[in-house]
Image (cartoon, rainbow, N blue to C red):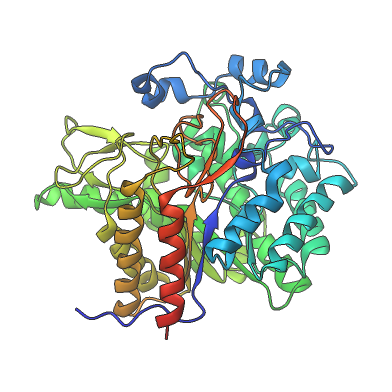
Length: 488
């Protein structure tokens, strides 16, 4: 099949999260956030790090993290030290040909506690400097407003997103960003992977599981507050910045039925509804889908909605739909099906796919399927906000890093996007996850490297933090240049 190519307006770039890349956790007036309190667990084996029970946040771990001043034991506190290297990093992005950078703003850097009356001016200036640096090279800015990291004060004092007061705190934060950066940001995303509230409550809605008697109810109540906050943020953005583009995002879990058995196909339908479509249906279609009524009844979920919530969701859907895509999995009624790792989840293994070192199954065709499904369902522009391969990379004595596995991953997944565009899908951009090495969110380690730029730091923050171009940097640079030459 002959595929014509990408449109000239297509956005090529990379993505990071403030908590994973910035460092400087106690500089510039920044407050402590929930990611700062996740320990490195350096004593654990690879298998233990993949075991869900070791990943869970507990009250004891949280309190220890809040009290500790140790930087090296908490990898998100040093990240890739972009706080001191952002000019160098953005220059490398420009050299590679990126025309968009997706980054997140740290809520705790703007409002250290989360509920102050006035923002931290030093934090605002830091992001203004980053945006100015991007614009110097003609790089567009895609901002994620909340990428998991919530000021710990909001957790301790208010119970985080289980408390409806969080909506007001978040809206004050959103208004502050819009007032200060309305001319600097091209695309806005209120919440990263909003479905994380369900599959990883601590990251998604800042809830510690053991503290909740009816976790299902409290998680979905917290998610409802995020849905309302999302709609109000869309409203505010369109009022303050009439031409702004504001979207929603999920961690996309693409499911295949294990067999043609009706039971497996029903399981696949439910998996898609409960892990994916529910969230985008609310934010893109503007209402709670009917299929969730039975699910909520089975889980004893009784949502408390304020007057006007239903109308608010309906009136302010998002402008575009974004998603992260890393792997696919199998849906089956067989509880003994072989398991493997995934994006903060344990998944049913597909025997037809190869897996990464962390067990994530690589499936470029699944990306094409996802793009078609999302566009068919919502008829809104799509953005691939995250896609990438975590691997152990080796820095050679001459400063080179040979990563043919990442090049192959990028080659096959970008080819799948091109096929989807030929299918008729309106997808306007792609930001590779971890464009520069950063601390992995799932395993809390630098060893699981995603970038096309190597950062000389180990899991405990030891190293020079010097940047090196991997072979994949050159490949991606050449790929972008070639696509720009042949784009329609």
